[in-house]
Length: 107
View (tube, rainbow, N blue to C red):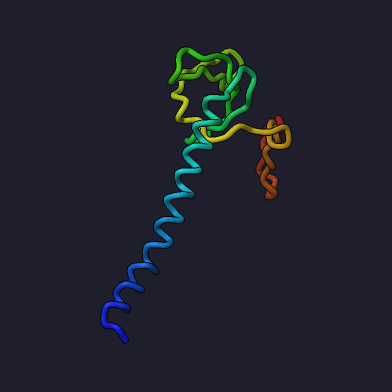
């Protein structure tokens, strides 16, 4: 058995997962950029910090205005938008605690 075969095989085995991960990461970055550039008014989105909001305007190529409550607008970087909510996810009510600790007004 050739003495260089084992180190070469070891390098190949380590290189394959690195190459596959790099391709997957590049694809994820491209998908995120495509989403961020396709945002339009009225889209329901989630930011990277978990904030749910509605797109209400764009102040530039790198920023977007989000309405987080009626009449409350904030400006965010487009890169902070993680996902666009679909009709199935948008406005889904939060589950109330099962231990009866919900407030009397239903919130």
